[in-house]
Image 1 (tube, rainbow, N blue to C red):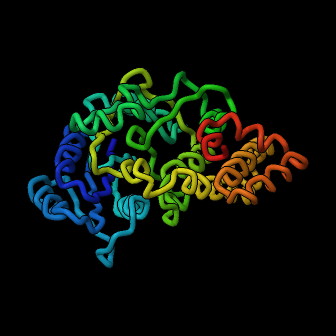
Image 2 (cartoon, rainbow, N blue to C red):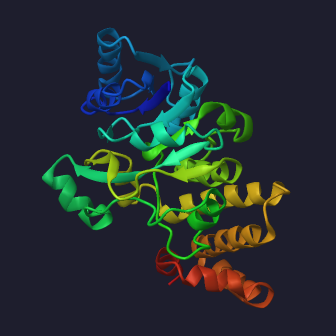
Image 3 (cartoon, one colour):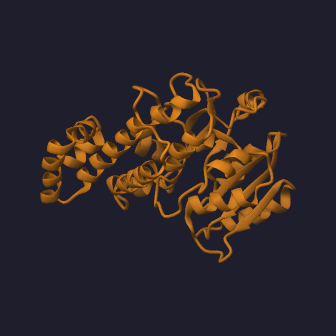
Amino acid sequence: MKISVIIPVYNAEKYVAQAVESALQFDEVSEVILVEDQSPDNALEVCQNLEKKYDRVKLHQHPDKGNHGAGASRNLGIEKATGDFIAFLDADDYYLPNRFDAEKKLFEDQEVDAVYGALGVHYYSEKAKEQYYSLFGDRLTTVYRKHSPEDVLPGMLNMKGSFGLFSIDALTLRRKPLLEKARPIFKTHLRLHQDTEFLFRSSYYLNFYPGILNEAVAMRGVHESNRITQVDSKKVRPSITRVMLWKEVNNWAENELTVPKDIKRHIKRTYRSWEIANAPFLKKWGMIFKYMITDYKSIRSGLYNINFRKELF
């Protein structure tokens, strides 16, 4: 089993060494691919030193050495990968010793295209904990029970009741079907949520199986300067990025002829609900009136979402 671990690196000089070394603890990891994304700090120098120190570490930058975002960096890492399996890790996160325990067994079955597990949370400082504990707590990011592959997408879309979540930090994919069935991998024009869009779309084409769900296999590193602070400080409005996400998912579902009608309808209604929530005041209520007549379930589905209600009212 040869696993390529892909780590996009941006503004993470303090954390990337820990991420790399957490991946190198596994004999199954044949390479750790660092994609440095024009960091404003000294991350590039740290990555260069890691490449010199460890034979399995490979450093890449974008051809223009510019900043292209996490999605483009992961795509470049996949392009450079040589392993039979792909795993992802954010530069400020890290793997735990049980990270690939389930994968070693499940991937013996050739029908298994992907395995997902649970993600824990680690606060790098008391300030970060104080700021973000209400968001993450000490909870696992996990799926609450085992599901068959055909139920993963409907579950993530909240069509199957309480499903839970999983992160790409805790996801391992078989490389060949990923490249054959799920292209494009990460859609780089999305400012945020490229990973969420990828999980929706890839779980439709690939067979996703549950791994370890009741304990963490990786840890989310929370600190004051990572991406979630931009959302929290309103530099990026969560509602705008959600509209962009669901517009993309809706476009995919409409153009993919094999997607079942009930999934298409659910995605369209979710997109409409976020679109309404983010519209200017007068347009918002005009859209509500329109959909109350033509598709009232779009409004009803939105009202079940607390973030939608906050934006609407």
